[in-house]
Image (cartoon, rainbow, N blue to C red):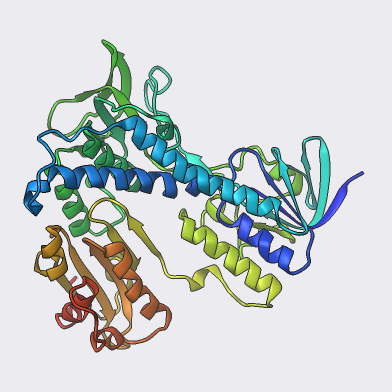
Length: 460
C-alpha cells in the first residue's frame, strides 16, 4: 500500500531543503529523498569545497608575494595538499551534515535515502516502496559532461567531482575547457604549484563574456604561468610513456600537450536519465533538461522541476531562487516568474569577475540607445593599497530611462560590489541613485559614481 504525502521532493540540492522547511512550517507532510550526498553539488563538489580550495591557493599566492608587502616567509612556499584537502573536507562536510541534520529534525518531514523513480504522475518508487503526492518537486541537479573525445576511454580523467578526492599535486594538469569551472581550477592548481595548460576549442576563453573581459582574464592567468591553447578544433587523448598526450590541432604551437593529469571541464549534463520521467509523462528537451514554464511547472500538472535539471540556470543562486518562486506562488498566492530575475553570476578567479545584466554583444543585438563607461582597477585606491590592481569595471545604462542594463566588475571585490548595481536594477531605479550616493572611503564601491560620471554613447 502506498504512503501518501502532501509533497514529495526528489533531491536535496539548494532548492529542496528550504522548500521542505517552508512546506513543513505550513503544516504540510513532506517526503524528501536523496540517493547520494545531502546538499547536492554546491555543498559537496561545487561552491563550498572549490571556494575553500581557492582560499588556500590565494593564501599561498600572497605568501609568495610577501616581499611586495614588506615581509618574507622563505624562498619556497610549500603547499601540503593533504592538509589542503583535509581543510576542504572539514568545511564541506560540516555543510553536508548540517543539511542532513536539519531535514531529519524537521517536523512533518520524512527523509528517505534512496534512488527515486516515477511510478506514475503522482507516485514515485524508492527502496521498493511507493509514495504518492499531489505535488512532486524534482531537484536532482546535474553532473560534469564527458564529451566523446577520441581516446576518452583510453586514459584516466578527472571531473570537478573527482577533483575533490585529489590530495596530491599533479605535476602538469591539462584542463580541457576554458570556461568558469576550468579557469577556477587552473589558477587554483597553478598557485598550489602545478604546471597548468588550458585547452579551449573556441577562439577565446569564457566565450559568453565580452571580448575585453575574456582577454583580461587570459592575461591575468598567463601572467601566473598558465599556458592557454585556443582554437583546439580536434581534441584527442592518448597514453604516452606514463603520461597523457592531448592532441589539440591548434592554429599555432605544437599539436600536442603532454600532461600528467587531465581535467574535463566542458559543461554539465542533467541527472534526468534514470528518473522514470516517461512513466509520469514529463517532457525533456534534446539535452535532457526538464522543460518547465515560467513558474517552473512541467508539462504535467502537479510536477515542478527546480535547480540545474531544468535548464533555467546553472548556479546555486538560481536554484535557490527557483525555490523562492515556487514557495511564494504556492503558499502566498504569488505571481513570481523566472523571467523576472536578472542574470547575474561570478567567475571566482583572482581577481573575481562579478557580472549582471546585458553584455556588449546583447546590447548590440538589442539596439536600444545606451550609454557605457569603463574604469581601470589600477586607478582604484583600495586596489592599489592591496597591490591587486588587475582588471576593470564597466557599466551600461539605458540612455532614455537611465536604468542600468548591465555591468562587469573584474577586480578585487568585484563579486561583492556588483550587487549594488544588481539591486538598483531590480528596483528599476535610475543610475543616479548610485552616482549621487556617498560611499565609504577607501573601498572599491566608492568608485561607482566615478565610473558613472564617464558615461558616453555606446558605439556599435
